[in-house]
Image (cartoon, rainbow over all chains, first blue to last red; front, side, top):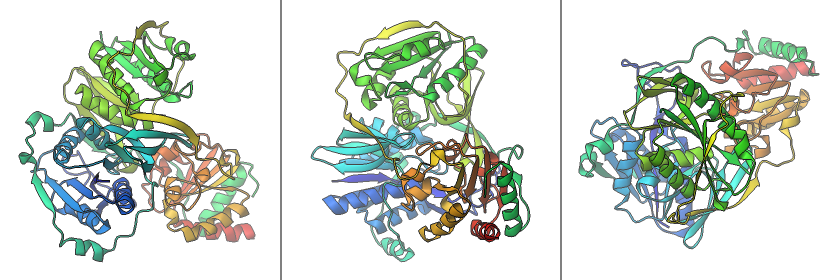
Length: 259
Length: 322
C-alpha cells in the first residue's frame, strides 16, 4: 500500500497571548514555537502503521519554506520513505492554490491512498484534503476515524455528530481526511529527528510545476484579524486556589445542587 | 434575481438543525438583497421533509432517489454542481458539518467558485459576500473577502445562527431527475453505528465535573474522579481526553459526543473549542478553571478562574472533606 501524506507546520498558540501583526492580517509569529499540525500527525501515524502492517511506501509532502522541513524530518523519523517540500517562492496561497500544487506533485507518484488532516489548527478551514481529492478526481471521505484496507477498496469509519459513525466502503485510490484520535501517535525524540536530517529530502520549486498564475491566485483573502471583544465573558474569581475553591462551592450550592 | 441556495442536510429521515439555521440566515440575506431563497433537497424516494422546508423557502429544488436517502459523497457533489451550473445562484450555503466538510471543498473545485468555511457571520457589500470566522482555536477572529466570481460558496458553523420560524413559501417545487449518465458512486454506506454508548450517561447528570487537555496525563484522572465522587457529580471530558484514550467516548461532551444539560458544569483544563461549547449550551451554570486567561471557555462560562486545575481540585477536596 503506497500512501502519500500532506502535512503542515503550525504555531503553538495555546496558553500564550497572541498579538496582531503590523498589517493587521495575521498574528505575530516570530516568538512562537512551531510544531506539526495535530491532525496531520495522526494522518502520518496512520500511514506509517498501514505501511508497517501491509508493506509499501509513505511519501510526506509539505508546501513551505526551509524551516517547514521540520515536519518532513519528523515524518522521516516516524518512518516516511520519501519527503518532498514545495518552495512557494514567497507567493501568497490559499487552499485552492495549495491543493492545486499538491495535486501537481502527487500526479507523478504511484499511490493507493492520500491522507491529510481534517483541518489545520491555525486557520481551521478544513479545505486542503478534499480540494486535493477533487483536483485528482479521487473518491474521498472527510473526518475518518478508522481505515481497514481490502483488495481494491477500504472499509472506513466516518465520524458524524452525536456519537454516530458512518461505516462505508470506498474505492481505492482514495483520499481520506483524518480525525484526531484515530490512533495514538508514537513519540518522536529530538535525536530521531536530528538523525533524519541525513536522509534525502527533495525540494521542488513552485514555478517548475507548470501551473498557470490563475490556478495559484487566491480565491479568498483575509481583510483583517482581530481579538474577540472583552465583554460578555465570565465573572472572574480572584485569589489563590483555597479562595477559588471556596467560591466554587458557594456558587454551586446556590444553584441547589447538594455537595 | 439574487438567488440564495441552502443545501438541506438531513439524516435518517430527519431534518438537521443546521438546515433550519441556514434557512433563517438565508431569509435575512434574501430580504436585505431582495433575493429569493431556494432550498436544495437531495433525498430518498419518500419522506416528510418537503413540507417542513416548503414553508421556509421561495423555491424547493428536489432530487429524489434511493441512493440519496442519506448523504452520498459522489452523487451529492455531482448533482449539486449540475444544479449550480443550471441555476447560477449568487450564494450557496452548506453546513460546516462532517458531511459539509466532505462536500463543499470538492464542490468549490468542481464549480470553480470561491469557498470560505466555518463562517459565523455573513454580510454582502457591493455585491460580494464577506464572512467572519474564528482562527487559532477561537482566540482570534478574521474577516474574509472573496475574489469576484459568478457565485460563492459558504459553509456555516452549526449554532452560529438561530433556527427561527420564518414566513416564506409555499415554495415553488422544481423536480430534478437523476441524470442517466451519472457515474456509480465510489463510496458506499454500509451502516450507521452509535459509538458513544457506554456505562455512564452524562446527559442525565445534575453536576458534571469535566476535564480537558489540561489534565495533562492519564495518571491525573483519578485525582479529578475522586473530586467528582466527593461532589456527587459525574466525570465527563472534552475531545482530547477521548482521543488519547484516557476515558471512553461515553464521557465526551461536544458535537461529536453528547450534548449535556446539567445544573452545573465545572470545566477543568478545557480550552473551549466550539465543538465543545456546542455541547454545553443546555447547562444551567458553567464554571471554568484554566491556566490560559485567553482560553475561549471563559467567554462561554458564567464564572471563571485563572489557576492550576490541580491546586483548585486539591483545595476543593480539602474543603469538602471538611
